[in-house]
Length: 119
Image (cartoon, rainbow, N blue to C red; front, side):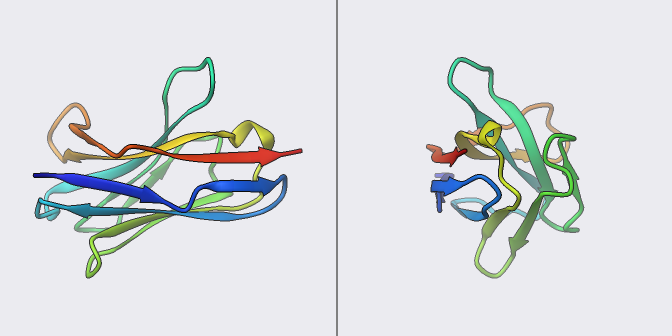
C-alpha cells in the first residue's frame, strides 16, 4: 500500500524559511516522479515543484522558482521542499504526490501539511 506522509509545516514570518518532508513507502520509486502541490483557502490546488526520482531532474512553478528547492534522498525514500524568502501568498496546505513517469496524473497523495506565512 502506497503511503505518503508530509511533515515540517508550521508558522513562519515573511522572509523566513521552512523545510517540508514527504516520506514515501509501499512502492519502488525508480520509474516515478514526485511532486509538491499546494492549496490556499478558497483557491484550487496548484502545482509547486516536481522531481524525477531516478535522475533528480526538477521543475518548478514560476511563482516559486528561485525561492523553493525540491530534492530527494533515495536512501530514505524521502522528498524535501526547502522554502526560502517566504511570502504571505505562500500560505497554503502543501501536499506531496506521486505519479508513474508515463502517467497523465498523480495517483497517490499525502494528507497535507499547513504552512502559514505571517506578514
